[in-house]
Amino acid sequence: MIVNCPTCKQTVEWNETSQYRPFCSKKCQLIDLGEWADEEKSIPCGANKDSETITLPDIEDIEAMLSEHSDDFFKE
Image (cartoon, rainbow, N blue to C red; front, side):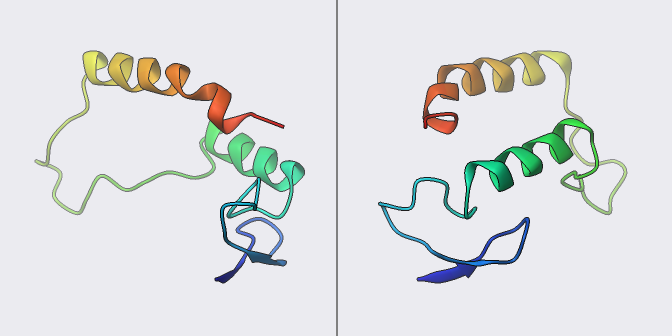
């Protein structure tokens, strides 16, 4: 499958050998990560303000999960 890199829009083949998929390169991958870290990007919680609230224990669980898999994301 061919997709566009989310950062630079260059076409990228999406398969098991595409090391940075869906990104074209490590540089684009890190640019995207930086945008999330700087909160320039976010996932909306939904239109309903009364929807489920993320609590501190939820965040700690998410951070633990990410740290367990960080080697997979940052491999060269």
